[in-house]
Amino acid sequence: MPKASYHTPVLLHEALSFLITAPNGTYVDATLGGGGHAEALLHRLGSSGRLIGLDADLDALSFAGERLKRFEERSTLVQGNFAKLVSILSGLGPRSVSGILFDLGVSSFQLDDGSKGFSFRADDVLDMRMDRSQSRDAITVLRDLDADGLARILHEYGEEKHARRIARKIVERRKQYPIRTSGQLSALVAEAVGSRFLTKSLARVFQAIRIEVNNELKHIESGLRQAIDFVAPGGRIVVISYHSLEDRIVKQEFKAASATSVRSGTPLLPDRPVEARLRILTKKPIEASDREQSENPRARSAKLRAAERI
Image: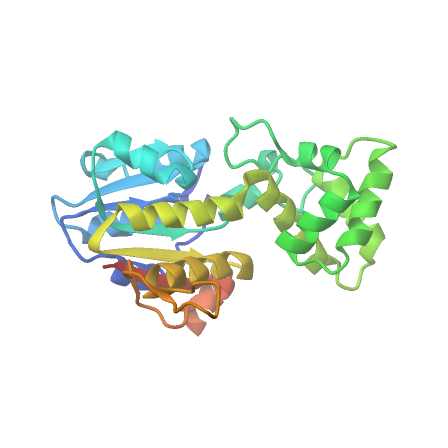
C-alpha cells in the first residue's frame, strides 16, 4: 500500500498547535487512518511523549503501523472504534491523556479501494463497512429498509432533496434483483434525479448510506462525550470534520460541555448553575488556507474545532 494511497493530513499545523500542551504527555489519535497526523505528532513530542492510535479499519491500522515503525517504542496502535474510547483506553493503562484528536470521515484510500465500496465513481461491490467484523453492510441496508426508512436516511444523513423519489426507485428495483454494486445504485439514482445535478446527488446518497452502515453520527456524539471524560484538565480535544452534520454535533457537544447553566424547562424556575467542563478555543471553526485547499482538495470542506478541559 503506497503512502500516496492515504490522504495528506488536513489542517496539520493548526491541529497540532491546538492539541499539544505537554510535550511528554500521552495523546490519542482516535482516527488513525494513514498515520499522517500521528507521525507529525510523534515528531513534535518529547522523548517521553506517547501516542495511542485507534482505527476501526484493519487495513488503515496495518499501513499506519508501517509508517510509524520508527516510533514503535512510543506508540500503541489498537483496532477499535472511538465510540468505545474509554473502554479501550482504560484497558491500556492511562487514567487520563493530554489530548485527543478526531479526524472524521473517510480516507482517500477507503474511497479508492474498490473492495470497500465507498465510492460511486467505480462499479464495485457495495460494502462501506469501516470495520469488516460487523455484519451489516450497504447491501443489507438497501435490502432491509422500507421506503420510509431509506428516505429518512437519505434526507437526514445526505440532505438529499430527492430522497423519497430515490427511495421509491430502490424499493421498486430490488423486487427485480438485489442491489449489490455501486454501479447498480448509481444507475438507480440517475433514473430518479436525472443528469443535471447527478454528481451531487450521488455524493449525498453514498454519504448517507455510509453513515447509516457505520452509525457514524451517534459514534461521534458518544466518542466526544467520552473524550471529555478522559482528557486531563488543561488537555485539549481537537476535531476536524468534513460536512455540516459532523460539524453540528461537534459544535453542540462543545457548547453543552462549556455551559455554566442548564435551563430548568419551566419559566417558573431559574436556570440551574452547573460547572463548565470545557473552554472552547475556536469561536468559529478554523478552515484551511487558500493554498492548502488548492494543493489538497480534501481540505476544502474541512472545519476544525478545539476545546480545553477545565
